[in-house]
Length: 355
Length: 255
Image 1 (cartoon, rainbow over the protein chains, first blue to last red):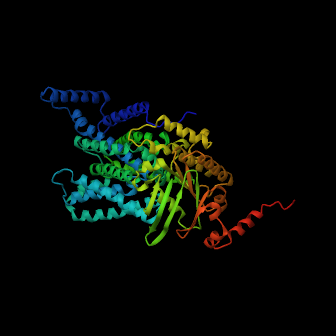
Image 2: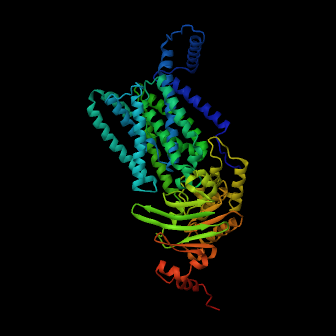
Image 3: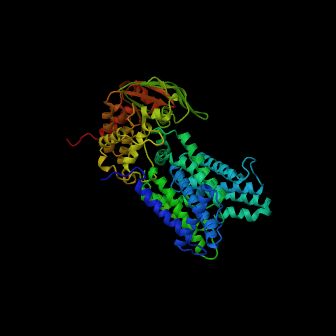
């Protein structure tokens, strides 16, 4: 028998990249106005050559006069880019939490981390909190901070109530915590009636109207925090077998746990501060991909990057075209799919339990 | 090899381990025994740095507090009594985790030495043909052998066992104790096991530590410690008589 592969090979990377490229093109071309692929490609070619002209030869840029190219370049392309990066980040964070807590139901939304991050962002908006050195990043810093605090609170409570950190206890506490946070959020909103419109957005989750700046921030967060997670794939394997076992085989449990919790909060906080709470992405994709790659995180984590991006791009596409010309919030689509998936995973883990 | 001096552990107000001192040398098998709640498992947790402790624990002349987790894991390995598995790892993936401490770098790949150690551990435990099976499909005995293989792959000097055969069928109990006996024959190795089956302790141990409410009721050679004069007060009954009565059920009465 062939022994299972330990790593994500070149072939897998190529297949997944091709798949993502196809989905990406589809999502850019299809929308309220369908644009043929050939047209899309020529617009990008022009845009690229004009960029090159501008920066390499210091010639004035050609202004994109056409509506088609302006839809593509200023609306759809950055949006799909943000969607893909958010999907990759959220599913990587989900996979990391599922490994760390040895709990296939763990996710930013089921543990209440996303709600916590949203509360942070909403508080920042409502009270106009900004940091002098980082004028634009007030919501983001608060979201990351609240995500991390939420994780600490939830895990601390779970540990107090049930030392084995059994999966049901953690999820239960996550649900209660989410409810608690949403009532806090209502309180904050009553203080900031003039900003209700803006705040409602956070609770729904949407990447409508996102630009290149957001994409760049998401990319940087994925590079930093996602990198931290990817570099701890072996430790995650040990945690997925059990925290005690991880300690016994020599994992520096405290340090690795702290690093991973920071990385997960970073990813979720940044994603929430840009796109609001988009639930269950981190639950659905790792679960589906685990069937394909097995539970070894050295294969699962890279697959989650691609799978999460693909899944969220398709969800976003569905959100845009299902009730065309009206647009749904992407969070509605993912939560619909996620709730079904939650029940499925719950059923499977209960049936497959062994000592 | 392992020298423990004045070891105490408290959980809040409760003194779980009370000024224990003992040592284990190469080739020895120490049986830690005593009634439920005597602090047996806490002893293992202290030696593996799972709980905070007072006193000193020296492994091969070095304070274990000074060692990094990976360094410690290269010197000692632990086999616990049960394992709850959440994901369908293969047998080989579980065993390979035993090599974690040998390549902790971010990008290090398992070397040929690691592969050899894993292969050997799988062969030793008779799991080589089943290495690609999902651990979710294993029986309790097979699962425990898988984790025993992980411990062997870790290639420690000191092996710690926490009730390793507690809920296993007799055949697996015999198998696992046989495998550990063979493992101990190589030079530079020692075993400490927590066990409450006194017959197993007597049969396999060279040293015994009898715990009572966290303190040492007796410590020394197995045949000196596991005697009525120490056992009966600790267990509150005539242990030897009960054991003999149980065994007499197996005497062939038809002949």
